[in-house]
Length: 319
Image (cartoon, rainbow, N blue to C red):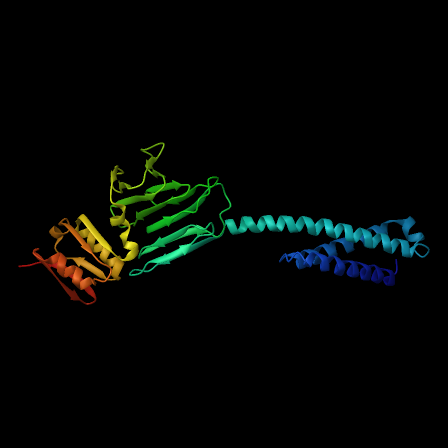
């Protein structure tokens, strides 16, 4: 085969590839260009190898050049369509798998709340100092996310794909519901509060083999130190009011209150007197009350005072 004939064959390949590319480009697939170029080089090499090794075809080249070029073009078109079609479908499938394996992370700073919408339409409100990790595409049998901190979940209904929230010591599985999940690493308790629907809570210690089913206005409290848990009926509005900036304290220790105030106001509070940490309080504060007002009301008729030192608020006994 002469160099001229090789060049002519390459021209045929290029012309056919351009036409095939024009059609495939209409699919708007991002990998079409690369796939066509790769297939073009592969097919061109295969065609030339076949022509070089076929003595009958070589001896009749001059007489049947038009027919051969037509057959070459047809073969190229067919191979390109087959290879790019396969690459397209495989690329689309692998693209979905890649997105399902990619994770996004939303971190809410102290002092603010954040509302996000997940790929399935689920809406999550995160409290200050919280982190939610979730896939950019829910592609498996379950819609799994991970929570560190506190969030309120309004789960999009999907009977075939349960929604699963994983935390350090507890997982919650639902189909479509509204519930609060509190799981800060520094807290002694993990708490699930159900507003609507049904949820199944599964402690990581597996004491409850089949999980614990909660119904509206029920709450599960898990002791992170001992693994013990209890279910109780509650007024969910009080436990989920943090979304509106409202605070309810019901038989809450000062130590727990301080953690909540730190997250809400982005401030460091130190209880300098250890014996004060277990003092308990019943109180309710609206969204418009600031930190100083809250501390003043909490310390009223109590044996402690607070003061600011080097950017930290210290709570200590009165002497």
